[in-house]
Image (spheres, rainbow, N blue to C red):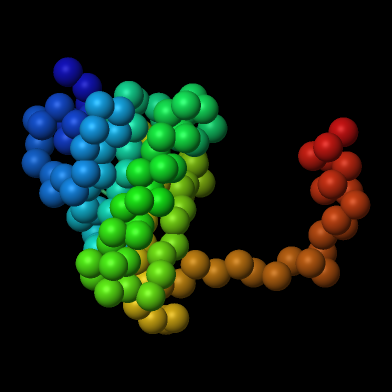
Length: 131
Ligand code: AMP
Ligand code: ZN
């Protein structure tokens, strides 16, 4: 038996509002409902985060994310979505998952990018990543 809360939902050991399920993945409502209809999509096989998930599983999960995002936008009459995943930084459940966050207005959710362009040498970053 796994200690992972999302594996428990997959194994139906604890309840979840499951909105989609197939052999490889599952989607259920996020308890926090950061925005109305906030949904998580996860592979059934346990991977800690996006850095570890295998390519085929990721491709399948992303396809389901796209399909569900369209379904959620349509059914909930949202304007669009944010799609995001956390790894280590910000991640609280260490079973790879993608958040679908339906959006209705500009100010309901803050995902802020601070502009550090004055402090960062783009050439240096470029060289570090590509060398
Ligand atoms: P993260 O910070 O990316 O690891 O997000 C984990 C998410 O899982 C949070 O948004 C939680 O609200 C959500 N969560 C935790 N436990 C449950 C659960 N039992 N059912 C549904 N969502 C959950
Ligand atoms: Zn798990």
